[in-house]
Image 1 (cartoon, rainbow, N blue to C red):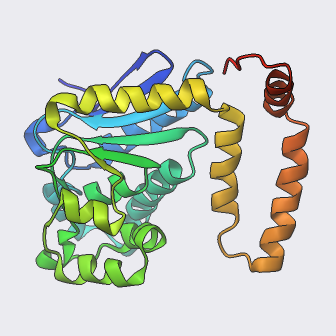
Image 2 (tube, one colour):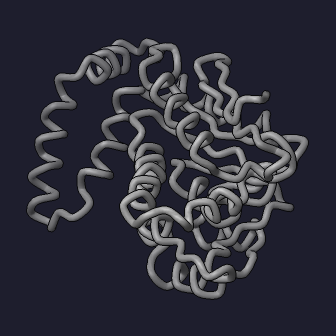
Length: 258
């Protein structure tokens, strides 16, 4: 039996591949736990600096497995809440992951699958990919992904996507700020790899981690609270190993090896 998530490493990149192509990579409990385990392993692995989420087959991710959701309809509220909490933890884990996460979108990203792509730091998609939050069309509510979508693209555009549930093209998704770049299918793997390598060799891992941590930490703070928090991070960063190394290398006109 195939594992729902395949993991491997290549040149300081941790690859996490959704592997239920026959089910359009729909999310069920087993896949959710598989993704979480892979992220935990990659966080602990000092060789991994960037994580790429990709998928087998023609669809990136079609969202929640509807057969699985149907099986939960006889559950109690408490049981369904526990399952929802597990999915919430997955989205938040990716959103706040200490290493940069890139989505490599080779096909449609729908419902929770669109949410999965949106919580990544960067996303590359093929021109043919479609994006949509289709939950409203089956009487469901995209409750968890809504929280992250509003943070990413704002209330106005989110309202359109969530309430009409229509498919949007890769170009529309990019213009909305839902994805970052559009790349032809035959170049997708290479372009994502090249971008990851640029971050790996050009940027401090400690700095990228602190930037991500700070962006999450600033949420909910007013201006004064945010600036106080920023001052603390600024002071701590000055004494970090990477900052000392980077400034010394720059002043000595030496290449920095990250």
